[in-house]
Length: 487
Image 1 (spheres, helix red, strand yellow):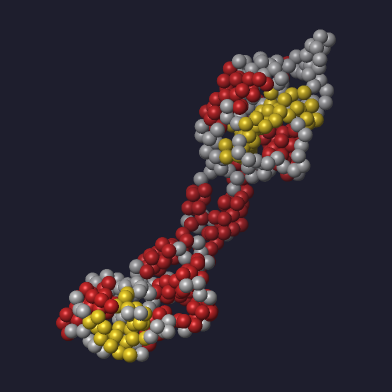
Image 2 (cartoon, rainbow, N blue to C red):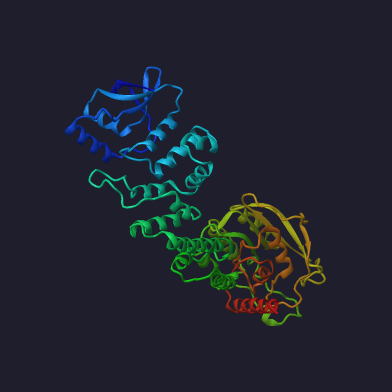
């Protein structure tokens, strides 16, 4: 090492940590008053014809601002490591602005990320143990830059000229307590620490962190287990932070309750008014048997008259209704929905044209009922099948094993609706095209067969029926089925 007066213009400032502007201003005031103290050398490393400042960055900024042209320096040759010299100088003498937690974080981050040094190499340079370096690295990896900056604003020695010292001394040991929390909860702790002027530490800090960690687990549980897409999760989160739920068990009971209510949501209304209120991108599967537009009235004599009444909207307006329904549902579907729409060979062309406006028709499934229905018993063939248009958008796979497009399921023997579909068939379709937490919609649910099928598959179901009588039957069937399964 040699000592030499060097031109300020030959010095190169290489940032190693934040400059405290109030320190620079204080130095300027002292230099103006008493002159520059030649005993305070700036440590530099010689590289070619330039001198890299390793220690004395605050003094350099002060003299440069004052227009001083020369300054005494301690010169290390180019074999010296910049960070080793800098750290050593800052630790070995009474410096104006000692390296604090946030400086160390920046230094370690630079050495690890930019210089690509190992943990052991960093430890050697800054004369720490590898364990100490690891502790600081955990803060770097687990704390958001925003929270670091917030804490830095209140750190001792980092204020402005008129307020040179922050109120608090954030340390690695203090941060070690909060690094396991998420960004939001870390900020809550930091804010409270600042507000309480550093009193949140020790046992009180540990207890606060423990509570916030439980809040995080509760929020994760809500995200993974709540099935009602219409409920405000933010409201539940607010309740969690307001200590409405003191234990995880209390929260689980609450979620179980609302899930049971949401599992089947039956609505007696015009589906067009209901669909508008459904949140966007929440429906994964449509399974429905809409009015066919053929003035359907069953003439099977064995049926009671109460089942053979005409179906509401089952006239030519049914095509307009289906079109408008699919148009409104377009934004309510996730990006890759599947659709199963029952129809007859008589209205297949119209249904195909309407559905094709909104989704790709992938196939037509033939539902083989096992025996023919009523009709012209002597002048025509027996109607043994119905069609199911299978459509979709995006990429959604059919569950293995791959099914045939002819499916044999016996028709319902005891009808409560003229076109009632078998629950087992609907259950099959739902299971092939969805997971058990995805929401199913049936905007023309009749007596609720889709909703009953969803009880077995575990899917949330939105069932809409305009006819009050059929709606009440659907409610009864769902309640009965649920009660039966609980026994």
